[in-house]
Image (cartoon, rainbow over all chains, first blue to last red; front, side, top):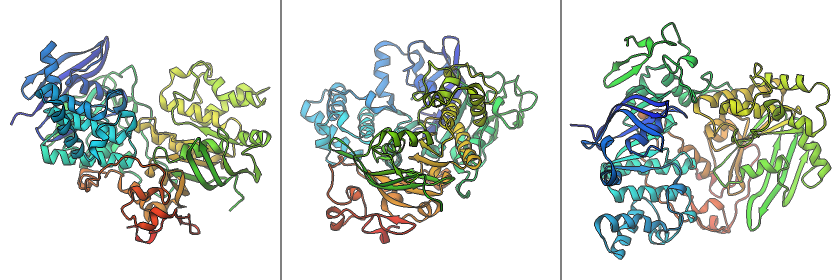
Length: 320
Length: 310
């Protein structure tokens, strides 16, 4: 089966700055891939490239993105507009900024039915209320009449999910949709995403900085650092046998210390993620506990380390 | 245990008709850490701002070494000298037009203590937060989020505080940097014996950092006790819900995806009884009618059905 999303050797440039370097991923229909990384890792640029939503100045400098067999990198004008929404939906972190503040929430969902299907006002509204109820909003008819500022962050994110369901996007990109939410609300949204996938076969590309979120929702995971995918594979495999020192360290921050006595020191990674300047060679080498001779000069090749599991580290062999 | 540095005695803070902090009593001690955990709007940040004197209480008393300081300008000035604060956002809380040295020395300048050894003091403070090598004439823009937070911590230490209030000290930082800052706080406590108040929405962080934990909901402390005990055997259904919301640590032990799909309602206006009754799975008639009091010695809980919490 061809994957629903195929990203091949994509590089994203903002002028002379390379935010993403030769990233390749594939996501099967009805599954969830998580892209995990810190600020400046390139995860959001990669997501925006897939959605063709890069800001002015950003461009896909190389590589290809196919969604459901359609090469979205070559789309323009009306074709691109149609592809957005139908092929790719985008769930943004800041739901307050993503929703129209002067339109009631229900109307924003109903717009999809009116615009795409030519549904009448009453019919579009009925379908919108049904969807709001489906994403777990109580008294959906009442909420449909409310404006975004009257809703909690969790409710707004549910409205965004209802819009994406209305669009029936083939691929739904979730760009840290739970990061600004309280932990108990985050838990509900993650559970909702899993339920929608089981019921409707939604395909997710889930962007996050949180390995806990990855553990909960991802079938496959790609770990990004300094614009490169440094490791990827089935989530169970990556969590059980992390191959890259950065992945190992990130997992340590999640799992480490669950049994630690109070006030025992936390496991740390020295330094900070690169900002504005990507180190040559392996981008992680200035912070890596295992740095050795080739790391500062030579970019490590991506090698197979297990079934469907790859990583790019000189400790794993391979040459470029 | 020694006498508390700062004590809150049934402190209430109202903003117009909204009660942000509702009858909160807490004690902060030298060398010990109190963690305050809760979600947005629970009143934890207002509590921090009351303690450092950025807000005045509507009701109740704050005491610094036994002296009330909530309403007296002179007592407040003395208390402020002894209480440092670390803010959540190291970009918002540090003035980019100041040099790093001026940021760190600002409390000394304000309290007129900078004469003489100002430069040496700046050097010492930066050294103590692991930034010994840097040029104090550099500007904050040259530093990463983690480094800026270290600068903010150096500023909080400038007056040799007895207590440092940390409001979400790591939530604006990258995952790989958070542990460095938490370790720095642990080290500073060991080295200087300062009392810490750590405010966080992250129960995992609070458990690791604290001796004692207070869980806040809707302006009230709903559960309080030794950190290990509260996080291992919670007695309030809200604490239980917070613990259950922590994601699993690997795909092999998913904790959230199997949940029953909870519906989200419209936030209801103030309730007469327990503020958690609108969300609580254990709710009965008494919860809607009567606000439960925080009861218990050592490990206290405010719930009519504490014995039924799983």
